[in-house]
Image 1: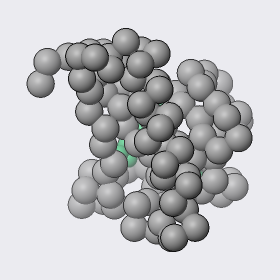
Image 2: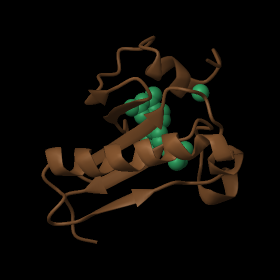
Image 3: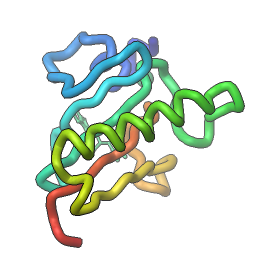
Image 4: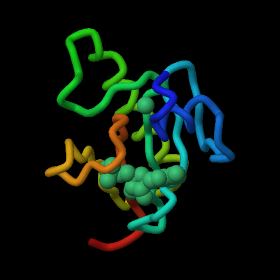
Length: 110
Ligand code: 5GP
Ligand code: ZN
């Protein structure tokens, strides 16, 4: 854990952020500044800075993030209607929190 990282602190339960889902590897919580009626963040518990830092050994965690997103979309009842999944990568890609996270946005017409 990177003690200076906001999402490490959230993932480790050091904030009052409520989890919608948690397992050994990932946690899911609501985005504090939602861009859609449903806007969740799916993050690995382990600190990874961005997509650029993924290694071959990280293939399972990437699959876990995506499969968790699929399951959360179903639970939040946006699966059938459709939703967006987004990774912002580094500053130029809009990333502002440098702990890997997958945005799930749904419940609105784009
Ligand atoms: P990024 O721009 O890095 O892809 O996305 C970071 C996201 O984290 C933003 O959508 C922002 O609203 C969200 N965020 C930033 N700080 C917090 C926080 O303390 N709690 C929660 N729940 N979301 C946060
Ligand atoms: Zn972190």
